Amino acid sequence: MALKINEDCINCAACVEDCPNQAISETPVIYVIDPERCTECVGFHDEPQCIPSCGVDAIVPDPDHRETREELLAKKERIAHKA
Image (cartoon, rainbow, N blue to C red; front, side, top):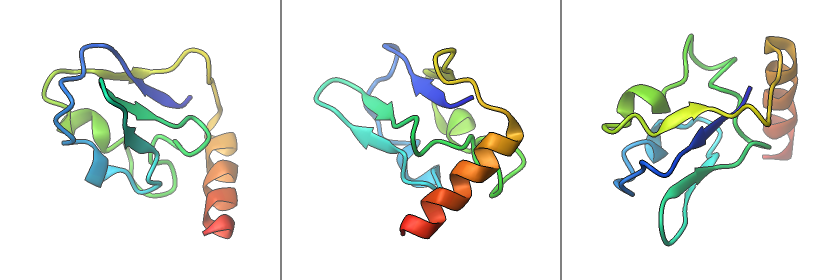
């Protein structure tokens, strides 16, 4: 499942550098996570790196983008081949 940033985001950018897929970007109000790029760090780390860097717990699972570990690994490979 991809992650998302909710309305509790304080726009601090602490999460951006931790994302190995460059899935986090800034909007005028809050940061957002692109579900097409978010792999929950599967294939890079044992757990998502953005969650612990968020000081206000604004990063949560996105119920609209449920994916298995295998699907997340396949997404990681697709992203790597596009780079």
